[in-house]
Image (cartoon, rainbow, N blue to C red; front, side):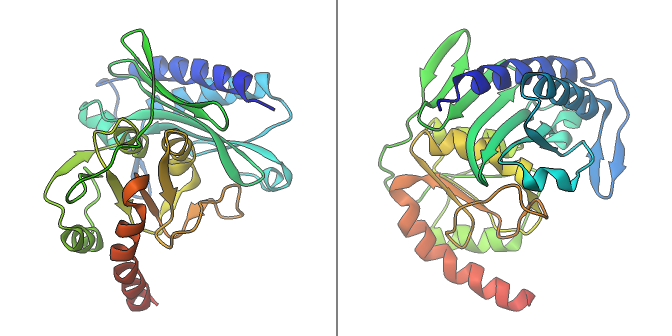
Length: 273
C-alpha cells in the first residue's frame, strides 16, 4: 500500500520536533552518554516524535536513539527508526548542520524517510513508490540526482569525525573538492540535490537511526546507498548497527567508486581482525 499517510504524519512530527529542539538552541548545558553529547533538545524532540507515532500507528514498533530499546520490536514487521537530533555536536556549535530524522522500515528494508533541518525550515521527504522531494521557502521540488559526474567526485565529509581510511579513499579517488557537513541526513540530501556526489563513512559504529531516513531520501532520488561491502543496509537487527558503514553516491559513479574503495576497505578489515 502507498505510504502517503505515514509520510504526512512523519513530516508533521519532524517539523514539530524541530520546533521543540529550537526552543533550547544555545540555551542548554550538555551531558554525555559515553563520548556522545546529549541535550534536553534531543529528549524534547524524541518525546514529540515517539508520542506522535504511538498515537498514529499504535501497532508499529519504534526504535529511537533516545528511547530504551526492547526486544519486542524484533517480531514487528513495521518499525519506525528515529534520530530525534542528528548532529548534536553541530546543534551545540550552532552551525545549523543538524536535523530531525524519522524513517520507517518494513521487513528489514527502509521504505520511508524524512529529514528536517530546523534552521532554515528545510524538509526532505521520500517514500518507496512515491519519490523524493525537498520543501524550502514554501516551495516543493522533486529530487532526482541522475546527472553524470565528470572528473573526480565531489565529496561531502564529516565535520566532527576524521578517519585515516576516508583520507586514503579520497586520495585514491582523486578527490580535491570536499565539503564538510554535520548530520548524515544532510550529507545524503546534498547528494540528492546534486550539490555533492559522494559520501563514504567506513566505520562500524553507525547506527540504524543514522542511515534509515537518509537512505530513502537519496535512493528515491535515484541515488545509490549501500554499506562499504556493496551490500544493502538492513534494519531492525538484534544489534541496531551498520557494521560496514555507509557508501552513498550519485548512481552514475557507484561502480567506479566501489572498485576503488573496496580493496582499501577489505585491507583495513584484515588489519582490524
